[in-house]
Image (tube, rainbow, N blue to C red; front, top):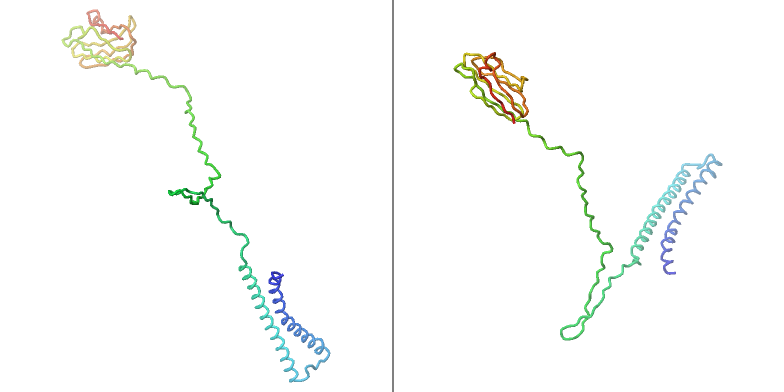
Length: 250
């Protein structure tokens, strides 16, 4: 009952404070109706004289002032009651109180043999366990295609030197030449006054020859497989006179 009375008291006070406003407003409305409907419409000569006008104006001003004053007072009372309610709500203690932490007492044995309680606090283990990160698995590197075979060694290139007898005799300076299979180049020098050349043949097949010349050097380049070849001068009569030799390719 006491709590109900505390809650209703501000409401009753607020309602009571508005009574003066209701009275002043009602009187003002009634006065306005009397002036307009009761006297204004029935008596065209109302308010009869200058004194009557002053009296009517004074009464109307007093009633308007009373209505405005009571409106201001009642609004302030309502605000005050609302503030009182807010203060009462803040002053009310909270019913939900956090429970105090509890500790367990474990007796401890002292050096003299007496047992003294020793407060210990148990810690709660974490609710969740961390999961170790999964080890990243590395897949073997994929290989595509067929590995290229080892490159074959480059074909051999052999350069040989050959010279005709500078005194004009029908002979070369060597009778035997040797080279590796592949590209064979023969640099022939002819410093004699007699024209010569060098020709390469395999059996009866001619594979290449330099121009016939004198007083300079000419080059012959041929590709040869392993085997035995003949080099000679193709000027008529020179080979028959002994101007030839053997080229061995391995």
